[in-house]
Length: 295
Length: 295
Image (cartoon, rainbow over all chains, first blue to last red; front, side):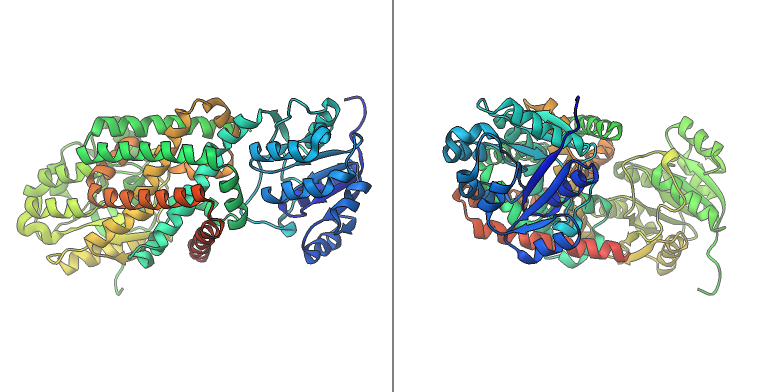
């Protein structure tokens, strides 16, 4: 890169964990002039202002977009689509829009019909970073360091717009990967959406059990880690589950078949087959583990 | 307790993570005279001897039992039963036997028929402690500190024998809980055996996916924690799954029904019901989380 990445005016829609952390990280890098915070909750925006995460509060999406060079939609996935509808009149080829949603297929499809020719300026994105805590008070400038960010450009995407969004994420220390929209939704359904669903279900399963008091008493480290994602925001995960329902339901069905297969092996006492399955899972897990420690 | 707990001669069958950690902790507490290590692998026993975890290697279960005051069967669950058969001739009312198996029902039932009247000297136990790593090199003297140990005495259990096993665990810093055999197996099936099965299955599901390379690349913190237990020893978990199959299959079936119910809600797009389920799971998880941080 010959010249330093710099955004004169950045609009962040949804100043929560992701939006807030991005604003902080760009400020820390000296890569942004002014940050306009946009959102539903004036209380949250004022908190972000007091914390220095944003420089200006704006409740009107259209006004914020008119003022901004780069617009980051860091709202829940459903709201991304509503916001695209609202800001469309203020978009032109000098502005760039990106989002951070965990589902890309439906957003890309709806964006095409909402934005028309201006779709070239929209670069869908998804930072693979987060914690169970949410809100601007959980935001941190190092959230994206060494974390993957997936960009899923469309065939109509403007290359300059793509390059700018890529540079924004590189500037905050992220590792940018390009993927097509469908691959993204398939992969994330397996690595994230299905595990969330299983984790939520396991937690409810325990709390609905007749022995729930003893279960709470006996739940140890393994259970704690297994159900960590059940602490995630219910509204956000409701929307993700519904928006990626096609992939998620397919994978859930396949996963259920696998479970039924293992149930049969246990029922019939097939020691060898059970051990083989567990051993191959252990081997596969070591690949996840190795990769993580080498990050 | 009026006098200090002290075992002149302790025999540990299976000097791995649990058996090794118990020997180290009792030595650190000055609560044991001599530790006899018993096991299949002479290499492992010699390693334990070199590390000072045990003081004597003994390959013959009967000889070890003749010499010992307290016998801890820290072998895989299947082997516990085989070892009870082997040591039975050397047992009498002055000796105490306990085990550390994750399943108690089948062990208790088999022990009754193997030991006859001597069953009074057998106190089934289960320390809720562990890590994915196994073997004596992973053993540590603080493994049981503030961890639960469940004892499941039988109606025929000798009260003095029970009190001695309880004191042994208290001496190494554990929190001892009494439960009946059936409750133990039901509760552990929910808090441990089913999550292990789901975690192993999820890991295989990812590694059998067409997009496995991208899945490995995208697997982040949530997936890593969700599948932590898939790194557990396959042979050990094969045996646990089979030995507790009655409870495990019942719970797996119920869990599958829950999953099918959620799939229907996602299919039909029932936002309110999905959010309610996720919110109740989040609330239940906070109870696990609060309890853990107060430990």
